[in-house]
Length: 97
Image 1: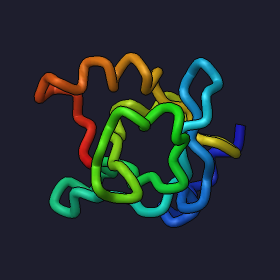
Image 2: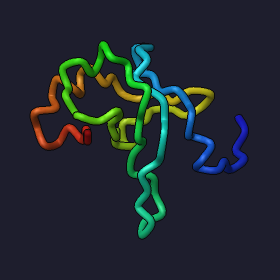
Image 3: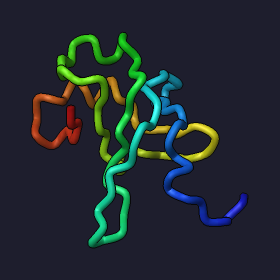
């Protein structure tokens, strides 16, 4: 495994998949907490229309919390977004449109 630090901007353009192998979207931007120097979330565009057809955001993307990220490599693997969307009614879901 290569432990060489990577630029945060290298995440932009990577495809995001759920841990079940379902395409979620593509990283368009990164949400940072500059005070704590941590990544808070990933702004996704090019969304999978089947996953987000019931979520009317009025926008072309979503922001997912970085805590959902399970692995980063050639692609980004996140927790199962379909299960998270079903619980989006609660304020703890973390999904920001």
